[in-house]
Length: 248
Image 1 (tube, rainbow, N blue to C red):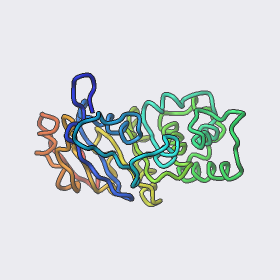
Image 2 (tube, rainbow, N blue to C red):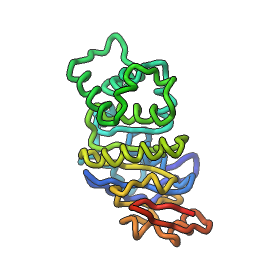
Image 3 (cartoon, helix red, strand yellow):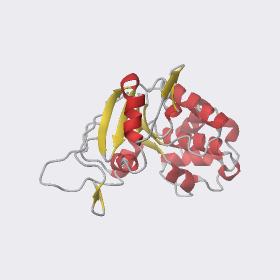
């Protein structure tokens, strides 16, 4: 992958199995956002003489809308796009159509309505059903966006810096929801700068730097003081408490 003349992901190889919960950690410019866009097919690898492959859920080729029904994407870009004067219920329901809001030409079925209610119950946001997203806190709106991504029962939920702009209480509440989701069968793939976002059930961590995988493995092997000091190029001390990791 290139941006202008600069290689963003170069010599990159990564495999994630169904059912895995994986965190990707790296500094700004390391290629994290590009990787997310590669998975969601917003970007494509540059053609090279050497063969390349980007296989998702066992397939090399997808109809884009079909693929996005298999992957739920929660990002700050989508957060800005979906914060409109729609109710929480309508915002979640619109996930079936890949739209922002539900439009008159959309055919809403009773099954869609039921699934919307079930997902909002699961994420503990049923009380937000009639509230406009423009009147929600950042934490509430983030859970609405996650619910929107889950209504079509994706195989994997892709989270791009999920606690960005959230206060301590909202961050804690969101992590508890993510822990609940790990028990539902959906895979979690998270890009983050913040070590405490990596919930205990997320056992594999990938360290990304300069467009390359620098480390890949279980948390005790990857989230070390030496590894993060090298990754961020400043002194980092890593502490572990109750399954959560913290950098100081």
